[in-house]
Length: 242
Image (tube, rainbow, N blue to C red; front, side, top):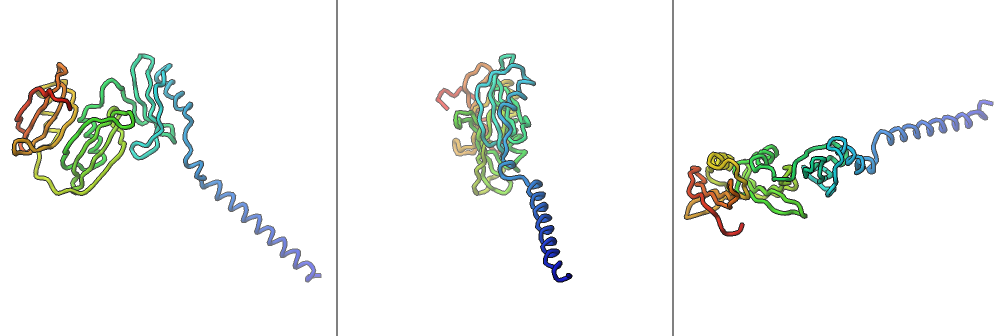
């Protein structure tokens, strides 16, 4: 009798082990998100509804799914209930609003530089300029970090969000006055200037910083400063196109 029962009990043990293994596998699959779940994006309608709760009956002008600050975001341009054009940057996977900026004027260059410095150990800023990238206005900051690597960093001109970074090695520079100091000095003379672009250059056999800007009367001008001392060399109208 014992011999006849042994195979059936062995089969029961095997069946029970198989069932337990299936439960373990199913449990581990439930805990680990699938690739589709990991890449899940919050529905656009939900994000727009969220914006309307805060800004009223907005008119959506443009929506882009892109990558900024090294994460997937939705960039939404809209006109709010007070007829102001604004840009919202929203995390595409969580739905969290990261940044909102008005589109009347670009973010001041000083604030853009602060954002760059929050991500890099900036030693010397070489050049700044505005440009268009895929139909969007951007600020491009060329600088050297403290490890003597040169960077070209592109940021959204209105929100300051990082679009991309490019880096390559360069030769060390001498001691230079910082761009922030030059801008501060310029604003002591002109309170409401709009800075168009800056660059580090050679001019009349010396290294200078050039700042191209619009003054209070919206005339285009060029400020030339000695890059080592910060002394103003020239500050006058600049008629040629940028």
